[in-house]
Image (cartoon, rainbow, N blue to C red):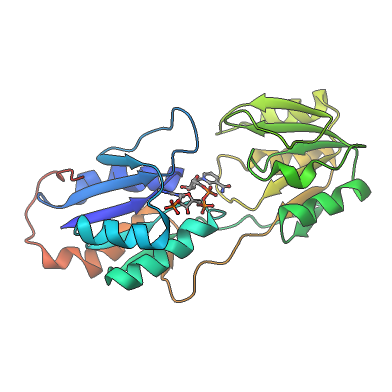
Length: 262
Ligand SMILES: NC(=O)c1ccc[n+]([C@@H]2O[C@H](COP(=O)([O-])OP(=O)(O)OC[C@H]3O[C@@H](n4cnc5c(N)ncnc54)[C@H](OP(=O)(O)O)[C@@H]3O)[C@@H](O)[C@H]2O)c1
């Protein structure tokens, strides 16, 4: 038996950590990363890095590596791979589960402005502020490139490439971030508006609290939908339950650590 986890998130790494403990001996585990960031935090078990070559390539990989269950634990905004996973799982007749952390919910005192896309977020900015804390990552920066009258503090794991906003300072950093740190960034750079994807999770949420405290607006980009008909759970533990229910009952209840498989 073989389980493939599509990763690149904290949840995917936590799931792999759980699975190496609970998968019976003889059940292989592979985590897949896109290879977007330099020096990624690797999960335990076998890891492969790089694209599959679209839905057809992923379906081939599932068949060739005799995958019995596919878990899409990619980022809520990684829409392409999720749709590829749905198509590939259907083509290769492999059960698929999506793991999606819950989105953020505004609280009292929040001034949030929903946007359907990065382009919509960019269009909303000039009416909201002049000094922008941009936390949507280095991909898709082109959407903000025409906003010459605004200044950007752009935070990402790796350095961005053009096209970028003309007036931009880059801050290379990787979460989790602290509330004190986010407060200090907003104060020091005189930020008057924040832009974020609705990524959810605790690791990058302190900027939302810091923005509320500072009384500044936040533009929140809505998530793309999960492909229709795919079961969704919110975290690693229910994903393990799903595996037990759908797949692992087919194995002998032997105790012991998981073996890796490529
Ligand atoms: N988008 C974000 O905001 C964000 C934030 C944090 C982390 N991430 C992580 O970064 C990765 C790339 O994100 P993205 O937004 O560029 O994804 P995407 O637009 O959905 O995917 C673009 C292509 O990258 C490849 N790919 C994506 N995830 C992969 C994975 N786990 N394993 C192997 N190939 C993968 C696939 O290439 P092929 O078609 O060749 O198979 C896919 O078609 C994802 O794994 C995601 O979990 C994304």
